[in-house]
Image 1 (cartoon, helix red, strand yellow):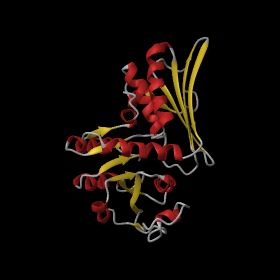
Image 2 (image 1 turned 90 degrees about the vertical axis):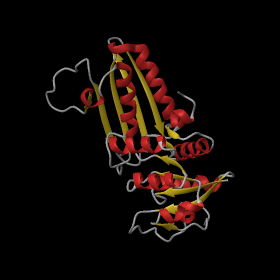
Image 3 (image 1 turned 30 degrees about the vertical axis):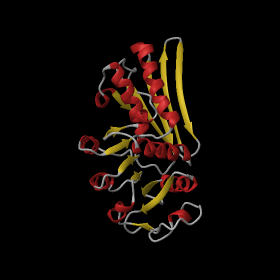
Image 4 (image 1 turned 120 degrees about the vertical axis):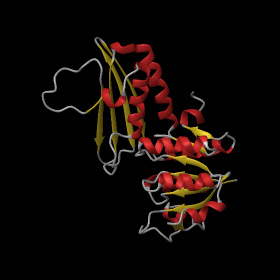
Length: 267
């Protein structure tokens, strides 16, 4: 039995993680946290997730939960790196799905992995999306620079960051294949008389509306033909199940920083 702490247990993803753990035979909920001042503090995490009461009350004190757990899953937007440091010091496996991390944050996760922690960090935990990463790389290698590339992502109207971490990762796949630079060669939207599209750019477009869980399309277009690779998520359970798959992967993994393509054997 793998005992798991959920950081951000009352959020959209946190609730689905709790619900899926409650249905599992090899996983147990060891703790649940929320930010200070949250209206959900003190409530049973299972009840908040609309499943049976699990006897785990939501707390703001992450550190006090660590001795009774084997792993932590963090999709929160607050103390992600601090939580990772505390969990690593106690030998817990760490799964992080927060996308709004800085380059310094990612470097710190890499340092923790090099220092003995077991971490999976991914911009998207969907099995289908990670296959999309693989297919995007294959398409970019096969089609070459003659094809223009545009990336379109759509999410619900409460998503705070743009573009999505998944869209950024897709662009990084293409820039990696072409030897381009993300900061220089990705163009975020177009407005006004911007002139003709240049050969060396990737268009990035973010759509926000309603309750869209997550859509991503990579469009390859040349004179005479077009290829579109699209993934659409209709339930957050696809991300929750992927994160739990990552926890199981880390149980037998060596120390290091991994992503979902490692978990799925796509590297």
